Amino acid sequence: MARTRVCITIDTEFSIAGAFSDKTKQPVAEPLVWCNVDGRSEGLGFMLDTFRRYDIQATFFVDTQHRHYFKHDPMRPIAQQLHAAGHEVQLHAHPCWTNFQNSDWRNTPRAERISDDISQHSIEATVKLIDQGIDTFKEWGIPRPRAFRSGNLHHGDGLYQALAQTGITYSSNIGVAIHDSGNPDYRLFSGQHQRHGVKEYPVLSFSDWRIGPKQNIKSLTIAGSSFAETRRLLEKARSEGIPLVVVLTHPFEFVQKRDLAFTQTRPDRLTQGRLRKLCEFLQENSDRFDACGLASAADAIPAAQASENKLLKGRLWHTVPRMVAQVANDRIGKWKLAQQYGKAGRNALPEDVKTLQGR
Image 1 (cartoon, rainbow, N blue to C red):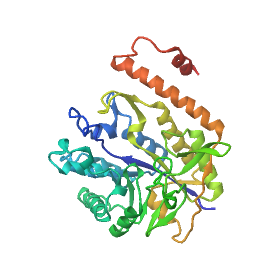
Image 2: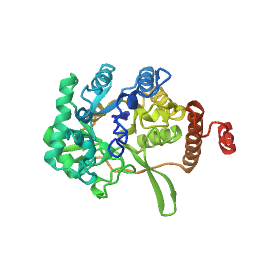
Image 3: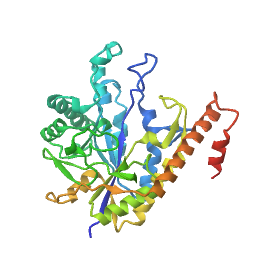
Image 4: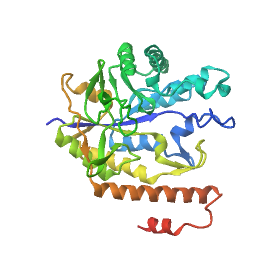
């Protein structure tokens, strides 16, 4: 039996940081990616160290549209470092950055702004967007992108037609629990699927609880799923014959923050621990699981292999502890940030948070 391929995918992007709605704010570049705390990178730096330690190849979907605002091109050295480290660098795009082509962007009425939803763009406009990314990769001196992921996982027929026109044959644009377009043809939970000549590998989505006819769907992310859930889903995917599992995360999810500029942050030990445990598991079970880049994984799957759209089931006794841990982590994080940076909450830790912290 072939190894089940596991693709840890990282959307690597900068942030508008509220600049469209608040004239006192500016977009944020490197702090959103490196997430430095006391001189140490707890975002991308932590991830690269972890991947190196456990010999994991990841896929970084890198946005290039920021160049419309950041003329010094701060993503260039990041993308080059990722490629030099042996990871796949693929294309990501948030169309909202194209608003900065208008020098008077601060005064553009909301109704006239270019939408960040790529499915609302024409095929011609989407081709232009993708071509900009392909040209940027060439300028950066890294291999032409072979896979694409849209901002916020928006998708539609036009996107896949544009991808086909630009020669990008692989994509991971779908995460049903993150964005459901309402089109049943794109309600994809797992596996390999073809749309307009492009092979789509959705972020794995699963049912984490079910009560009678009602069930909750989640997409598999580091920030939103416990390691116990992730391990079960990987084992389940293998037993069900799902050839490839896509996991989603972002560098900024490995810190807790108190401001959009990421100047007040602390490490998020919960999410960091989840990534570390996942990588350790993949290394220890490399005879059954292959942690590799998305394009590499797609290349290895037979072109004619049809994939069922299977919805895996989680377990309630994994879901409840994860929810409790997440609430505790968020509340304790807010309190510790207040302790570290001042303002409200400095003098006392609420009793319920103390209790949760001690468990």
